[in-house]
Image (cartoon, rainbow, N blue to C red; front, side, top):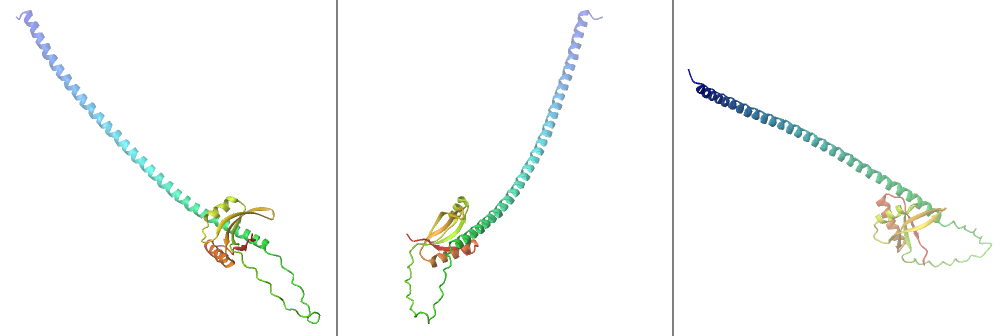
Length: 218
């Protein structure tokens, strides 16, 4: 029969073997769990990355569609703005033409009454002496492009006009109690020169007959 000491060593050795086996098993289980955990983390990261990628693609599409929509709206607004600007210019030109016609009519001299001719039997015939022609004063002719109730409109038109002769000026005037600002090309040498310039402006801007006049010589 083995001695108690021998039994103690046997039990101790068995305990060591069992402990080694259990420790090895636990180590294997821990490594397996760690590997599984890492695999789960990788799958979760892949899923999150895929969702982020899809979200970014969706956001990029939304931004691109929004930009395209804004660009279409902006282009439409530009077209409408050009149409409105053209309409405003036509209205301004028409108003200026009507005001110019009214001013020209107001500035026209009153008709002179023609005296009744004297019969030859009542008075002797007299030869009419021709009146001396008044020489044209250089640089006194003008073309009235338009008259405006707002100075800002007159200034805008004056800045836009491009003429090869004369000087574009703005002259304040009062007609029938209404303050007006006339845009004129002054300093023209003759009526023919003024009429030629007016014809060019009429054709360029689609206007009716412009007022051509002569300033008082200083």
